[in-house]
Image (cartoon, rainbow, N blue to C red; front, side, top):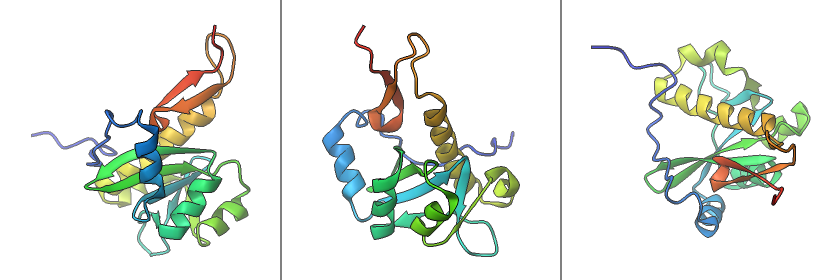
Length: 161
């Protein structure tokens, strides 16, 4: 038997068939039970515990972060609970930390191996999506700006030609 590849197996339903439904996505974002995993300049939010753990935000804190995020990506569903990644890279570090109840942002590569595989996979997915959005703001063909669609899983050129 082979061992699973680290940073895989987050176990969320990525709901690819629902990503294009803007009303459904908006309802998931507005749900007080949704969870948000903030990312700041390729660093993930971690909880205050001694052992590295996910820094999920929920309820009012999650809604505040979603409102300020440059990009928010639906990572998937766990049952009926929606999980989002929110990129706060446009904010200064102190402002991003204050928005996240003073928690700390750390590079996942420094602590990922000490975490449970599912948690590390979720953090890597959030970090990867935020990084991709920041690096692909312009069309590779014509140079026009792109916009996010499909709940953050696609970027679309704004040039109609």
